[in-house]
Length: 180
Ligand SMILES: [Cu+2]
Image 1 (spheres, rainbow, N blue to C red):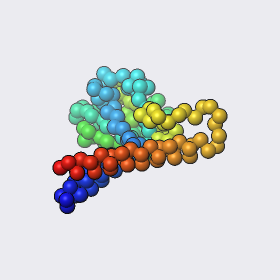
Image 2: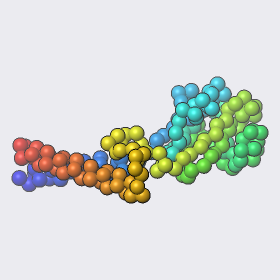
Image 3: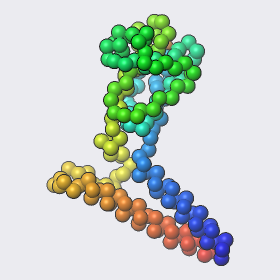
Image 4: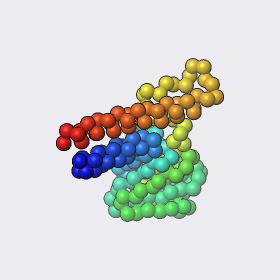
C-alpha cells in the first residue's frame, strides 16, 4: 500500500511538471544558417526569413576556426560591415546568444572579407506573448466579438483545461497504483 502511494506521487508530480511546460512557452534554439551553419556559402537572409525569433529563444552559431562572430551595434555598422566596431566578439566555434528582449540585433563574421561576401545576419526578435503558439489549437481565436475580457477568458480556459487533464491523470494513476 505504501509503495503504490509512493508510485502515484511520482506519477502525479511527473505529470504536473509536464503540464507546466506549455505554460512557460517553449523557448526555441535557432542554429544560425540551419544545416550549413555560420559559413560564407549560407544565405542568411532567406534562412532568417523562415524563422520566428521570440524573446527567450537562443541563437547558436556553429563554425570552423576560419570564422568568428561579431555583434554589431547599429544598422549602419551592419550595412557597412564595420566589424571593427563590434560590441561583442565570439570565436569558440559554438557561440550561444540568448535573445533577451524584443528588437533587432546584428551579427557578422569578423574575418576580413567575409562580411562583405554576405556573411552577416540581422535578427529581429518579437515578444513571446505577441504571437500565440500554434499548439494551443483548442483556444478560440479572439476575432469575433472581442470583449476586453477576451485575454483573461482564454487564460481561464487554459487553466481549466490543465486542471481537467491533471485530474484525469490523477484518477488514471490512482487506478494503475491499485492494480500494481
Ligand atoms: Cu567568416
